[in-house]
Amino acid sequence: MITRITSHDQRYDLAPGEGADAVHTNPQYAYAVCLLHDDSGLRGTGLAFTLGGGNALVCQAIDILAGALVRRDIEELMAEWGTVYQQLANHHQLRWLGPHKGVVHLALAAITNACFDLWAKWRGVPLWRLLLDLSPAQIVALLDLRYLEDVLPATRALELINAAQASRPERMGVIASGYPGYDTSVGWFHYDEQQVRENAKRALAAGFGAIKLKVGARDPNYDLRRAAAVREAVGDQTTVMLDANQQWTLPQALEMCQALQHINPLWVEEPTHPDDILAHQTIAQAIAPVKVAAGEHVPNAIVFKNYLQLGAMHYVQADCVRVGGISEFITISLLARHYNLPVAPHVGDMGQIHQHLVLFNHIALGHEKLFLEYIPHLRQHFVHPASVRDGVYHTPQEPGSSSDLVDMDA
Image (tube, rainbow, N blue to C red; front, side, top):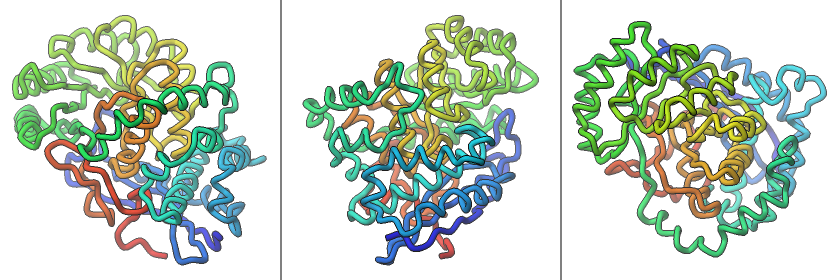
């Protein structure tokens, strides 16, 4: 039984240049943490990701929302999590501040993720194993499918999961082989041409077959020079992605995507404001065969649905510490499966939870084994940091979701 809930404002300073992009030029990586304490001595850790400022507001919202879970048994709670999630998300007053976005929704992410972590620890298994052991009906019971019924009613969700059941054994090999990663730390925005060139070569030597570069400078030549340096450093066979972090207007995005096509990027990520779905649709049509990736600032499954309906996104970058937690991540993954689009998560959790979720997506839902973003800057702050060797995430075995932080106060 859950006996107590606490929230914690955890902030971590980065080394100069780390984490910077065209918009967020001086980030502080931060987690609004929800801790669920139960009467057996177990503790569930749930994370929501911010860049420092405003993190305390998310913690305040956790304190308001999470009280309804006290004195609930975790197995009983998770058996009807889709209903519980709806109740929490529809708080009669706090819903006015969203709905289903912003500070309140991030708080819901932390609470949800803490519940999944506690559930896996209660069963004594890693999160990926817990999810794989659930029946299709149990998976659907975790989900809030309101406002998605036009494309993803419960019957369609069940159909998608059941359709992947027979071929699951063919995909189980990923547990032993691990899940490929890609290196984002190569190309932070303030790194000059020489540094991104050296970082790119270092990533290749470490076994990564894909890397990402931040773009979106006021001076287009800065982007063009750095992109050319990266492509020259890694050759034509390495996958390169570009990330503008919402910096461009639509006309700028169309111009810059055209100018950068010569380096043959797999995708351009967040090319403009995340609320402008029609602009993303325009860009997606204009820059083909280069793809559009987005999701780290898409707040909920309903908006993801609209992106997918309009063909405005090719790579779905849902993030369980930015949307409403693990259950909404699964919902978005099912939407992507319905539209036959790949999921390549943004990793505000530094890949800790998502290393479990991509295994579930691949094995249980039949998603392509693509790659998972790798950012190493907070490794030392996790009790069980993700094991990434030779460019591959190796499967975690500890019970839980790999979310526990070092020196976290009770």
